[in-house]
Image (cartoon, rainbow, N blue to C red; front, side, top):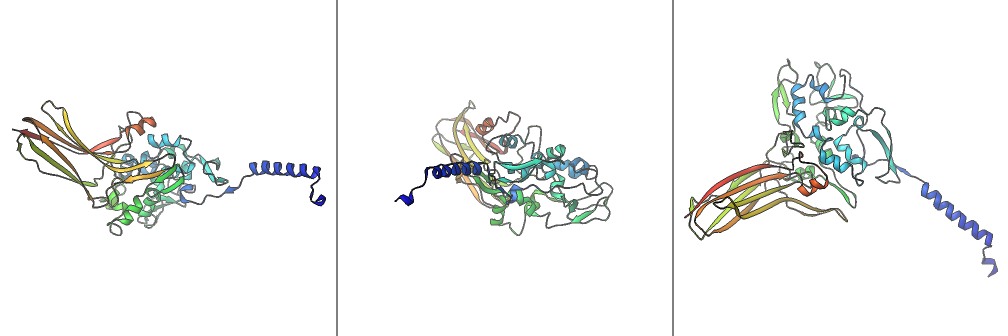
Length: 398
């Protein structure tokens, strides 16, 4: 057995070697390159020949109507949005969240080149020497869509413009919209990005017939630049839910739902049962409603008021998703309306006494709950919902 014994000095050398290796490995860093699309900003863009700036106001000197429309859009608020900024400040927020809200490297303060040991919370970053803080504030701005490889891209080429325009209808298609509006991934066990609008559209009845641009950039006929002959164009206000990012803003709303109330009798007798229903149909959207941010939901509230205008009976309904975020991010339920789907909400009440009553029916679209808004300290000037349907019925009980 003597030949198998390790001399004491060799044993200590082995222990020191193991300790040294552990210390070395602890400091050793493997830089993993960025591989997923949402991890990368669009490469730096130089100012195309014929322009003086990449900022929207520069484009707006000639494309006046387009600029004014964009100013009303939620795209223009993508970076400044109070909810997004609140989420961004959380320790759980990784670097790549900004890549949809300020997609150009020109807009980002740092250049990200990789991840230490593949950890999304340890990006390898350097200061961006060409960072444009004013362009950052514009969020999804003109150049986000219309500048690539240092040139301007349009649906048509142009020989008359003071700047070159490269025609590329493949780039300026629904694929560009979906690159942000279909970000669906579990980034970490407690962090999920769930925007599935593109998948919803592909699975729906409008795929191959209509796309994002058909509805959210309606076609018009106008002069692209003052003094030029009218031609086919599209509106750039990007209407959607219509819930503003600030109470001073008034974005355009694109209606997705149709409403069908049932009929009420002119008079009721004591002990009659009042029955009422409201049907909501996703008639106009090529995706689910609501869509996008999983915190969005629709509320239906039907309330009967007595002669003193006091509520005596209420029925509510909710359309939307429910998520559990801790200890693991997962969807609990989802009753969003598919394209063409109808959901009916019913109220029934026994009218006990004679007198005059009112039935108030209201449908509202919500960005998030008051509890979430309070948790993120969003303030009173951050609208949480808008009303999209409201009707009041007078009820006479004899």
